[in-house]
Length: 481
Image (tube, rainbow, N blue to C red):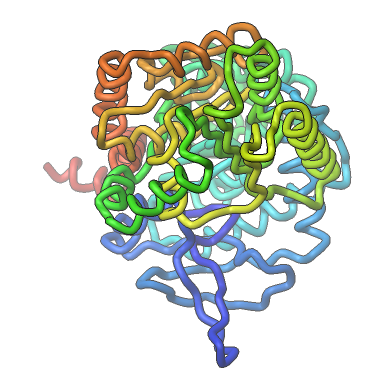
């Protein structure tokens, strides 16, 4: 497994002794048993600049750190990954920066990840590379280790060619990804956008999501990376959550008591609307606030019996765009509360910090309506987390059609967050929806989330990867038969 971050966080005990604990998140939960059963190694950065940590074991997993300097964190991670690729791949909601300096750092760090992976991987091993920070690794790794089976999964959207073509290094990125045997995307449209980029840049056909690469040296494909012809498959594999972990938390009495306490602390309003997001310009938090404020102004919602709770966890606060967004959001919260709040009730309860999973589940249980108004999102797992917790089959999900989750969660109230009037109608429909309709919609949503969980996602991807390019041992066994 190769990802920007290792699946553990360093913690320090009271006596100053350092140790490691597993990072929260569905990806780690899904892949941990796969890693254990296959004697896997996880390659990634520890999260600390200039960390000399060598290979180690934690929580039964073998971990192979890739060190990053403070300059590389600024240039490769905060720079090219999050100030170029992130906004470009999210429909240029914010303007991407195209810097040769950050690109050079991105190339160098990807090379180091590829070298570390080549050293860690056994003969004929399967290597799964994760996400947009490491798009050059598949090709770099194949050049070093042609015996490997390589998969890549892109957790964020892949843009339409009209946007992607802005990138000065578009060919290098596509060639980097084509080093993989299987490239996974969240949505069918994302896979289609990637294949369209392949066709436009290299003038080849991509029937049924397959890219046929000729052997190196035949002149039909620039910079081919293998002595043998290869087939690369691009498909969508929508990621999900560890649904069983959320349903188990719902059964805990302490979590249920906390949900009741949250409602009490908010004044037991008739309706609690909830937004849970990283503080990011892709999440449509401002659009959500605009629609809510207009409903209060028009008298269609009353601050005495409706409250909007917004959890906005800190994100990339060293990047100027994110600092400016925080200022803008906090000014909006102050303005809405100043205009519509009362001594007893705030219109918006704004919380700018992260919470443990137990607290988030309590918030989900307390909320009558979940607002997911992303302007562009690869998936948005918060929508699925909310659904997984609603064992009472109640609650309403208002979901942006521009989030990948909208492809699966069709019984949600789907909205275009840019359409403020449409968003207002959906919010009012959620407030006034009958219990029978709420239950019917939520039952259908829960069936989807509980059966298509993150374990199934990883199993589907790895199964498709094995079929895309059988390991040398599997080929040898077939020849013997």
